[in-house]
Structures are given as C-alpha cells and as structure tokens.
Length: 344
Ligand code: SAM
Ligand code: SF4
Ligand code: SF4
Image (cartoon, rainbow, N blue to C red; front, side, top):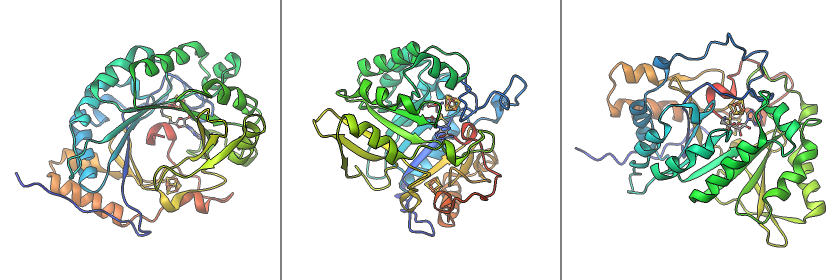
C-alpha cells in the first residue's frame, strides 16, 4: 500500500483545514429553546431514517480523507451524539487513526450530558480524549425550561461528575446565554466550576438556522459576561492556546482556573476558522451558516476510492470563501441549516 502524506489545504483566504466536526445523528432528546424549538421539532418532525446516516465505516473514511489534508482534531456532535447506538464503537475506530506524522488524533465529543453518567466510562475506554457538556443553568426551573422537556438538572451534574471520575484529558462546559432567560445564572455557573479543572465557556446566542427566533436583543455580549464575573472574581485575559481557537480565554487572578467566551456575534473569528462540518447524512459544510452542503455520502455510496474522496475534499476546501459572522447584517439571507442538523 502506498502511504499518501497528503497536502495541507488552504482555502481562498489562506485558512487550513484542521478540525472536523462530525454529526452522528440529527435526533435529540432535548428541545433547547435556542436550538430545537418544540413548535418546529414536534412529534411529527421528520428526522432522518437510519439508512440515510453515514455508517461508522463511512465516517471513518471521511475522517481519513480529512486527516490526509491536515485535520488533527475530531469532534463528535449532533443532535445528541450519545443517542447514536454504539457510539463508543465509533470512538474506538477513530482512535485507531493516525496523522501522516503518526500522531493519534485529538477526539472530543459535545453532549447535553443526559446520558453521560452511564456512557462516560465506555467512551473514555474507547479512546475519547475530551468531553464538552452543555449546561445552561444551575437553577432547576430555568434548566428545565431551557431544555424544554423538563429534564432534571441533577442527572446532567451526575454525568459531569462521572466524566471527572473517569479521567478525560479535559472537560468543558458550554453555556449558551440568552438575555432575560439565563443571564442571571452566569455567575453561579462560573462559581460552581471555579477552583476545578473544568472550564466553562459562555456562548453568545447565535442566529443558526431559521427556527430559533433569534434577534440581537437576546444576545448578551461576552464582554458583559466577563465583566459580571470579573466584578466578583477578578479575571485577566489569556492568550489563545492555539491559532483557530474559538473561545477567548480568561484566568482568575487568584489562580482558581479559567473561563472562556465564544463571541461569534460580537467578535467574529472567521479569519482563523479551520473547521469543516459533516452532517449526519454525509454532507460537508464549510461554514456553520452555510445554506448548502456537499454530498460526500453520494460519492461514498457510488464506490469512490480514497484518492477520489480526498480530491473532492481538496476541491471543496480550496474554493472555500466563507466568513458569515464577519458579514452578518440584519438582512443576511435566511436560508440556513439548523444547528441540530449540521452539528454545533
Ligand atoms: N446535543 C449536544 C449538546 O447540546 O451539547 C451537541 C449538539 S449542540 C447543537 C452543540 C452546541 O451548540 C451546544 O453546546 C449548544 O448549546 C450549542 N448551540 C445550539 N444552538 C445554539 C445557538 N443558537 N447559539 C449558540 N449555541 C448554540
Ligand atoms: Fe439537543 Fe444540543 Fe440542540 Fe439542545 S443544543 S436541542 S441538547 S442538539
Ligand atoms: Fe467559521 Fe462560518 Fe463561523 Fe465564520 S461564520 S467562524 S467561517 S463557521
């Protein structure tokens, strides 16, 4: 077998392809108000039939093609990735992959935490390096209202505790902040994880998809969130850990850890965006806000070779010009893909 060392792709703005976010299902047991509002994602919503989803083998082939072109980080997401049966088997398959330099990949997963307590150990054993748990409030009523299925807070907190016990390399918390809904909970969340190795990242409510009723008044700028925390526990900025990092980072001056802020609305970071996304049905999206994906599943199921898959990926990435967040205006086109489909 010939070993292909592949090329380091650049898009039209000189950005490399470094991270691949893989959505493994479009289904979710939560109906977070900012992501899958109940009125749209109701009982009769048409989720993808299983045959439409990429199989684990197909996902591995796409990941390998990405790796040949410079991908070194994989993130499993959804929908809720822990709803995909045998997800730990996929993790184990991805953990066997190596970069052209022979390095293992950095494999992460984003989850709502509802099934983490009983899945964390199997995921860790399969080779998952890092986990991000979404947690929008520590107030029971607000938490239940935001997931909109009355899911109890304690089950997610249990999941986070088990994740800490099994020893992932890193655990992060994602908190989407919506004005008038959970912005008063920011300090409590920061304080809950202060002094632990768990990093909280506050995320500005984004206008992904077209169903979450987004408007700018509901966005709490990260600067305001950081000020609120810093007024009680002084913070100082940290340099990004690596180029392309989405979160701005701050450390507590007294050494009690750090927090992050993902300011995609108020401080877009398209200039260093090295991420591609694969939807559960195998479409490649080069931007979270894209209205169109490239159908890799059709290629795979038409019997393409690995070289053909790599060539297709190269062609798509080379032509990439996306910078939606930098261009965002009140009248940006509204034909956008839902976050639960494309994977956050
Ligand atoms: N279900 C998993 C979860 O919630 O962690 C993974 C998929 S979810 C789409 C990935 C991330 O996107 C979550 O942290 C979620 O909070 C975030 N998210 C969803 N809709 C968002 C929005 N409108 N603005 C900002 N972040 C959003
Ligand atoms: Fe589900 Fe995650 Fe979307 Fe919430 S944010 S509805 S948990 S996919
Ligand atoms: Fe990347 Fe698109 Fe987000 Fe800009 S708007 S940071 S290009 S995903």
